[in-house]
Each structure stands twice: as C-alpha cells, then as structure tokens.
Length: 50
Image (cartoon, rainbow, N blue to C red; front, side, top):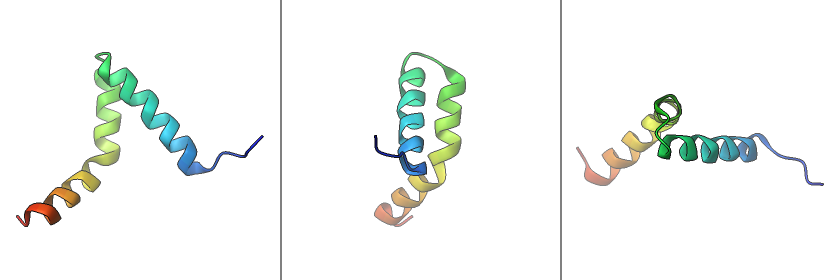
C-alpha cells in the first residue's frame, strides 16, 4: 500500500469539501475559500494585470 503524502491528503480533503459545498454546505465552501482565495487572487491578478 502506498503511503499518502500531505499533498495527497490535502487533495482528498479538497475533493470532500468541494462535494459538500456543491451539496449546499456553506461551512465547507468557506473552508475551501479560506484555503485557496490567495492563490486564485494571485493567478487572476497575474493574468489580468490589475
């Protein structure tokens, strides 16, 4: 059995949270947002330039 890395566990958690958020779980959406908003903002800023 392969050992899971922290990145693997994070991806599993994100998948679970995304499924929960899609089902209407506001707390799951908030967790995903809080975890990823800086990355998304930075990518959008670099693509759009403002």
